[in-house]
Image (cartoon, rainbow, N blue to C red; front, side, top):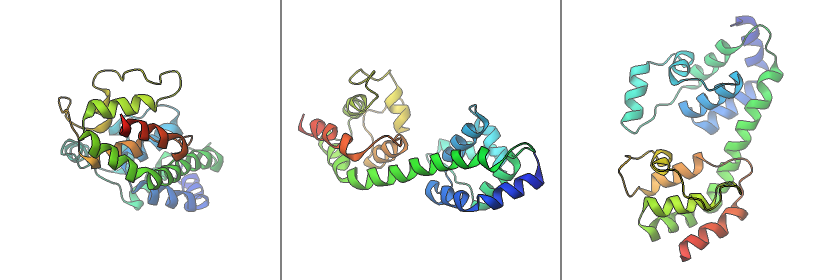
Length: 199
């Protein structure tokens, strides 16, 4: 950690840092993904909690109760400062921040175009997890398209009990948003949803 360099990088990237924070709404998961990419390796939740100065037990309890906690903007900025080493430059951080911002912006666009149709699909299947798994399997990359998802994966993605057979529309829409990538477009996804509504 280099305090002087951390202050310099945060000062130069303040616009991107604030934009990431606003788009992520301080989600600990989003922050964890960002720092894992910056570190070029997955960082365990306890490291993310340390960086953010959050109590590990309280964070774990919040996740278990289905209400993931969020970081304040100040906690996020301090975490970035702490993560900076003496040899780091603005260019170590800017492209990673920008790619995460692009992903959030794309997710906003796709969800605003598709949330009505996704809600219609959820209503039609009554939140049936196996039908949602079928939709997801048709939206996977070409090499895996149409293949059944591994057992338990859809419940994990939806963040519901492993034995649950239905989920709420909120769970479904949140899951869909979380799993969108920058390459995903409403034009590609819309006909796939339509096919599942018509099935």
